[in-house]
Image (tube, rainbow, N blue to C red):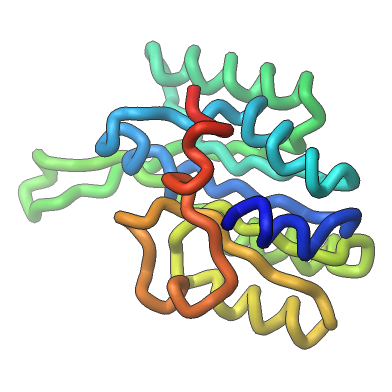
Amino acid sequence: MATEILEKFKNKKAGIFIDDANLFYMQKRIGWEIDWQKTKQFFENHLPNSVWFYYLGMPQIGKGRFENEKLKEDLEKNRFFVKTKPLKKIYLDDKKITFKHKCNFDVEIAFDIARNINSIDLVIIMSGDSDFLEAKNFCLQKGKNFLVVCFEERVAWEIRRVYHLFFEGIKDFVRK
């Protein structure tokens, strides 16, 4: 089914926008990771004229910082445009003891879509966040195609009503 959907867009110039923060925890939960090189190769078999954007939260220190710096370097070597910003500490209690790290790139992604809309035919968002529905409306108003790629288990119900692919359906092609 995934290849059928992608065949509909064959030879379109795609802008592919990857929201790492939205995909990170789901990969941990399901026990497998996306290999971005394989993912790029899979999509470019159908969409050879693609531009890839990757949005990455950056830990301040430690192993996570080192791993994300390495990921950024690898992605940039393979022609991804990578944008980073520091992770924030979001406290989950009033005493500021329990927290989680968070990074949100929704605005940056929306602006990058708008900046690039005249040079692409298809916008692909890799995120299950329903905040991107307004980006879909913008793309359709501009006469552009729109596709979401996300995990089935962590997708907003609104996304199920838009043209979409699930990573689980292309797992054999994109799994690390």
